[in-house]
Amino acid sequence: MFDFSATSKPQQIQDNLIAYARLYKGLPGITIHDADTFWFVRNQIAPGDRILRARWNDAEADAQIDATIAQISRHTDQMSWLVFPCDQPADLGARLAARGFQGGRSPNWMWADLTTLAPLPTIPSLFHIKEVCSDTLLDEWIRLSEAGVKVDLSSFHTAYQRDGYGAAAQTQHYIGYQDGVPVTTGSVMAAGGCATIYDISTPAAYRGQGFASTLTHALMTIIRGWGYADTWIWSSAKAKSVYQKLGYIEADFGIEMYRWHK
Image 1: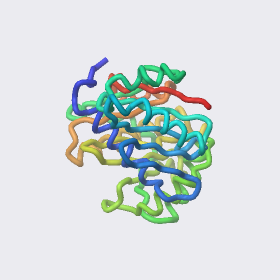
Image 2: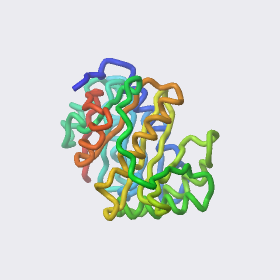
Image 3: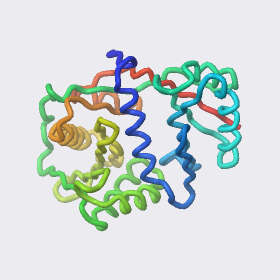
């Protein structure tokens, strides 16, 4: 496992995640607080309920933590708090644990060296990839993604439609087709000095055939084409082996995750 906790990468990841969360700012049902601390509440699995940044001095930290919990409790009864090495105070995780938060080092973070990109997987016959460049294709992307994750993604649709398409947008979205049938989806986003892959989703009927792997490899190639020498991803436990075959390795970015329940 590579240890990046003392590098600039945790800050880049934090900034990227915050830039992604800001896509949902102002949408119905979503509350975002964007100041010395950054948190957002959706009360649904996607895009979730998370605190992504805290910047307090030692003297004010305890009062600010309690005030933040009080604010959030008006909107939801549970929250995940990601603590980064660049957050302040330095003992933020310990202060959360003292308040009954459960957690510790966040697992399933992975990193890939794009200068030595793994060989392209065997491409399934008649498979091709198309960039989402219209509302019609975004509708198709949403339907397919929802079928893969079994979650309502209406907020994603509104946020991505508002963000737009092509190079001017913050995110770019892609659909993989097998003989003309849409089978897998994914997105890429560059922000905070890094670029990463989001939203890989494949409906159950199309899994195990290499579609997601081929799309992911293509998105890694796109990121390398933007000039990035490496990339990171947060993986589900089940998907780790897929990413490892593409050259990702487990990485320690010094990120901790604590869960709060009212």
